[in-house]
Length: 208
Image 1: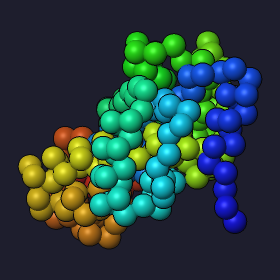
Image 2 (image 1 turned 120 degrees about the vertical axis):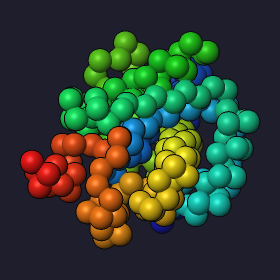
Image 3 (image 1 turned 180 degrees about the vertical axis):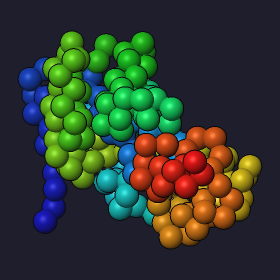
Image 4 (image 1 turned 45 degrees about the horizontal axis):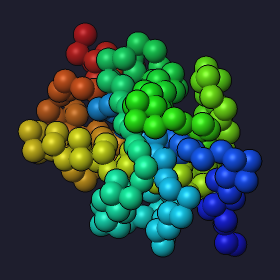
């Protein structure tokens, strides 16, 4: 089944809406690090063959697409919320906050008129928005945002991997894999872990 990635954007263009932001976040599941969101505004004639939900792309392709999107978009913005704040307000609210931060960054550069969001309704926005379930595979703008958010967060994990190679952040990106849990049990917790997440909570309880 071929999905028309331009369907939502074209409907908005036909209504005279010119600047459309696609918004997506990444990093709800990992035990460590920020949740990261991106907002991307693409030109109407934007085309990138193979662009889809970033999770379906190889890392090599994501990196190539990241550069292409950054160089060819009208504007983009990144928002991220720290592990400490994730623990304080919960991951759902932190994801929403990161998205609103990314949108706010874009609005400093361009007069955003409408936002297409992956799954999450952003009711507090003062501009119109459309929430699309599995939007990163249905809208070209959200797909672009998913690539920017994913590559941004992965690069943060590579930086962490350089500092703490024994945890294997470069391979699991902070997700609760068997190897990651084993590393936590062996080496303990470093700064940046989300203390309200099950496997981390368990280690903290055992330390008491």
